[in-house]
Length: 66
Image 1 (cartoon, helix red, strand yellow):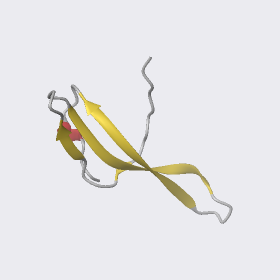
Image 2 (cartoon, one colour):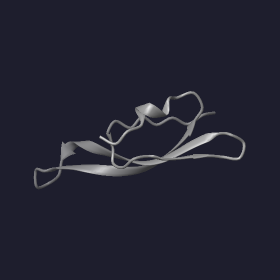
Image 3 (cartoon, helix red, strand yellow):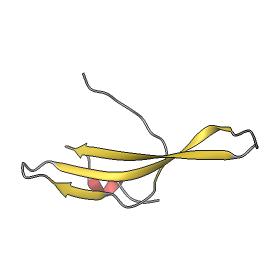
Image 4 (cartoon, one colour):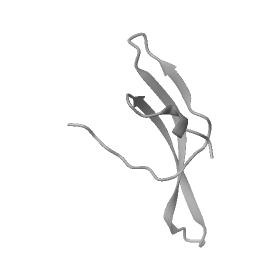
């Protein structure tokens, strides 16, 4: 079974891309996702997620800080 999570947001900093000794590519990055509801004081907040990607077929050029 593969777990899946879809995060819609922006990349906070440039991804750190590394290659393992076996040749696999791994990227570490932060993604900021805005909440769809307002706080008690009426302001919008966001959450920051630490994400690790095991890249097999994805092109690394799509991972850029916005």
